Image 1 (cartoon, rainbow, N blue to C red):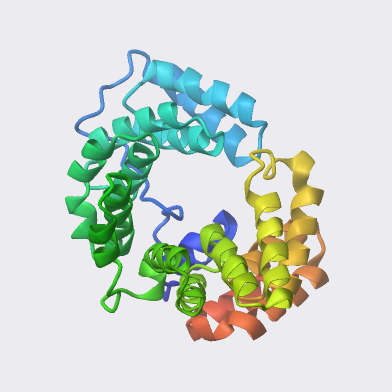
Image 2 (image 1 turned 90 degrees about the vertical axis):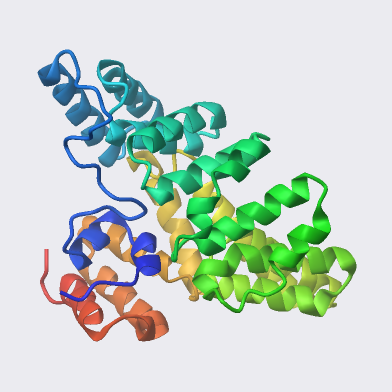
Length: 333
């Protein structure tokens, strides 16, 4: 079966990723195997499994974040080394902007699965955020050597150098990004754009923010940079457009409750505005179509999916385009 690229699959809602992928893994990370050699077995496996199943169901069904956190912690107390529970706790704490406990659970996850470089990247990112620069730098080599995450690793390395007062070395790291795809290098492009902006080279900054957005259209730092550089270049209409798009993304991502059932109308309204104003963000079409389908609005979901295929379909393999159209327009469930 043909599957989407690694980058696009990460952008898909869970239901769509399951539709298009055949390996059973969720976007953004590998599923832990049932038996990890470094994980201790719970004293009461049946009690742990019941607690784990309850927490996972509550979270995956869009439960209240505090209730989800309580349920995950209850499972965690029964098996503190379980990779899946630690992954969920780490991500939820990060979403809640509770970065120290998030770091703790990412460390437990990394201890259990040292070859999971996505988890290592999250660990490094939090270490940098919390000022643990030496520890973050020590953790970078596997990321820099990873074919898929080398751009993320380079961005973190440049950020660390900058925070250490070594700006020239940081600038040198992002000066030549020719070996990286836009999807890999979007953070590096945006960082280089910020350096150019601070030096007053608005044209170069605008070009780098545009390159960053070609790799990740929803990257808020690049959206902010695009607005600021357009404004400094005297392009007020363009700056206002970027400001509006950025505000919509903030509404969509900075509210931890946005994915709960109660907030569904607010999320849907933001998605509808975004796909109309910013068709470059293909994930918006996918999420909106998924919401419409779940609400029983088959015609609306089909129209949204066809708008997505018209705007971004060239990025997909023919088989993937067919699966999406069949699922949303051809009677698929």
